[in-house]
Length: 139
Image (spheres, rainbow, N blue to C red):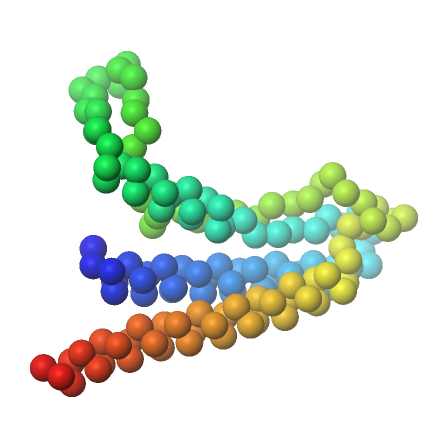
C-alpha cells in the first residue's frame, strides 16, 4: 500500500472515530442528570498506535511460520485496518449523589475538542488531495 492510500485511509478512519466520539459525548451530556448513568468514552488511538508499531517491528524482524495450530504462535504484525474503536464505560467513579458520573462541563469541552479535531482532519485530507492534484497538473 502506498503512503497516499494509507494516509487517506487513516484520516478517514480518524474522522469516523471523531464522529463516534461526538455521538458518545452528546449522549453523555444528554444523560448528565439521569440517576446511575455511567459515562462512556471511546478508545481507539492506543490500539491504533500498537498496530502501527507492530507493523514497524515486523518489517525488521524474523517471521516465524507455523504449520500446526499446536505450534508456538509468534507475535505478528497487527493490520491497522482491523483496529476498531471501542466504547468504554466508566463504572468506577461516581461524582454525584445520584450515582451519575457525567460532568457536563467536561463533556461540553470534549464535544468542542472533537469538533476542532474533525475540522483539522478534514483540512489534512484536503491537503493530501491537493498534493495529488498538483502532481497531476505537472504531468
